[in-house]
Amino acid sequence: MAINLQAIKPHQVSRDLKGKIVTIYGEPKVGKTTISTRFPKSLLIAFEKGFNALPNVMVQPVTKWREFKEVLKELAKAENKESFGTIIVDTADIAFDLCEAFVCNREGVDKIGDIPYGAGYKMLKKEFNDALRSIPMMDYGLVMISHAVNSTLTDEEGVEYSKITPTLPKAPRAIVLSMSDVIGYAKNIERDGVQQSVLFMRGTPRFEAGSRFRYTPNYIKFDYNSLVNAIADAIEKEAEE
Image 1 (cartoon, helix red, strand yellow):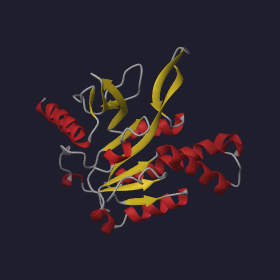
Image 2: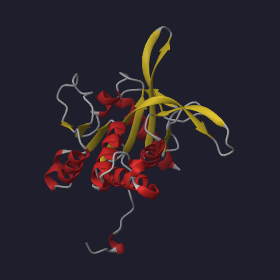
Image 3: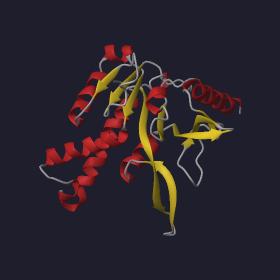
């Protein structure tokens, strides 16, 4: 492809969730997969069977990393770009486990640490990173799902502290979170005796969350329309500036 800088036009930020990269993590049965399948023209890459109660969703089960790589090749085809708009990775945790098994098998070892000089960890990080990042580079939106865990972390001064984070190990968690336009922590809470699901969109010392959009609210009701409206409002406010 010939590069023509004169053909570049200003980037326009869509007011909906089309093309966005979103990570949603949280408690079991809070609705992570259900709400993710509401994204535009979604295709659920099911690394686990969390879709049994979801009618009319487009699902591709995956049990091996090489199968995921085959899906990525399919997604590069023009006809599939017409059919699908958002790719859901459910869960990123299992995807990483399968990625590790793939690299170990390819290199003929039982454990990633058996590859000399720490090279295995670099191979694993690159394999996982390249695969995930190829999805938005093909102009798909991407939703990555994980569970929540109370992790013990260490700050810059070596002091340990507790924080709720995605259950991904440190290296893949850094990849997933750095890619994301929105990181949402989904949780069931009780208010006035009524249970409701909320999505926290701003991080605190207690949990991981965040957004590239400055004006996203601290939290919203956890449903698709509320998420669309929160992002659209945040983009509009930023555009006004």
